[in-house]
Length: 123
Image 1 (cartoon, rainbow, N blue to C red):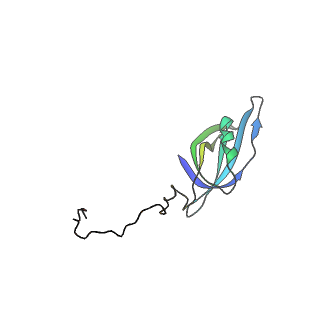
Image 2 (cartoon, one colour):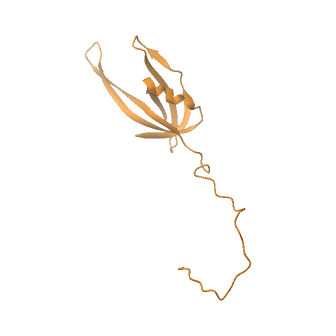
């Protein structure tokens, strides 16, 4: 799955437990009629993917949905969801997409036109 939008927030990396589990969160505001602010977490080696991005940048984030069950002390099941990112890439702004057109300065022109030459163009 993918989410596209503008980066609203990038949090600092957090480390948990003796194992050194790493997590870094970001918020992306979607470009929809009713924009959504989605918290996306990057874990372990994927935390480093956010180093080259900044707030305000348009991005496309590849995600996985994660869910887990927790049984509270009263024996009632609770369910939690997370959006986990595994790839991120910058989106080019409108008008900046694709290669620049070739300059027309080096084209040759001619004034030597022969009207007796057949027109063999198919259109």
